[in-house]
Length: 303
Ligand SMILES: Cc1cc2nc3c(=O)[nH]c(=O)nc-3n(C[C@H](O)[C@H](O)[C@H](O)COP(=O)(O)O)c2cc1C
Ligand SMILES: Nc1ncnc2c1ncn2[C@@H]1O[C@H](COP(=O)(O)OP(=O)(O)OP(=O)(O)O)[C@@H](O)[C@H]1O
Image (cartoon, rainbow, N blue to C red):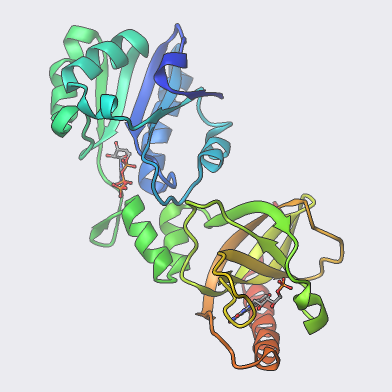
């Protein structure tokens, strides 16, 4: 996959199958669109292109994570900053200048509610109106639903903030994850009997509801079970720095400075400010048993 920041840097010559949107999280609805452009690229002599508008807001996926997710799936990921110029471009001009002249689109794949251009005048009907003139086809993909609600990034953000991680994971189609370099903590965990890996999510990356979760952890290329706390550890920390701190079953190495990925699987309880470190320690021992039980009942294959 070629990763391109800004449309100006795109210089592909081939015809393309393009999909467009914000694509935060690349959830199951988005995956329908991805599958469609990938099929076109397989069947025909064209490149698959994801145009992702960058909204600069709290996100399910950082740009690096989105890039990694798409790496072996599509030919191009173009990140388009959602600037005033982009917002004010007339939809007709977007079709002619960008989809036709720049991207050489022969297939355009969008959801039923996709909007673009000045005052959001562009939609799939307008794309269809110009299809013959510019020589592309338009696929309008029906929305993927969970029960009676459309799957959307907004819905999944709400679920995470409610601690409903199993449903968030189901709608994403993969477990919600956090990747970061493991940091030094206050080294308290070790003396309390539960050494933890401390992961600091990127500033804009959404942490689920503050609390304790069963999870799995990838470190040194191996998946382990874990139980971790999302939050600011109010019992021991003065500053309100967001962390995901995870106790990793059976890990005995030194992970400081290494990159680890945590996949969050199930919510156990909210984060609590305990009266003493002793109380915290007693509770974490229970959390560790909870995590073990959860992982025993939900075995996972090493990936
Ligand atoms: C399973 C688990 C549950 C935790 N729950 C809480 C909690 O409810 N409240 C809290 O203040 N800290 C909680 N923590 C964070 C601990 O306070 C923290 O890991 C410990 O103090 C060690 O910090 P350190 O890595 O800076 O040494 C939890 C940590 C783990 C691993
Ligand atoms: N549930 C879905 N099923 C099929 N297509 C979808 C679904 N949700 C979004 N799309 C389409 O995917 C593209 C990108 O969607 P986008 O990320 O902008 O929307 P979203 O997931 O609804 O996000 P938000 O909740 O932030 O508005 C658009 O073409 C959109 O119509």
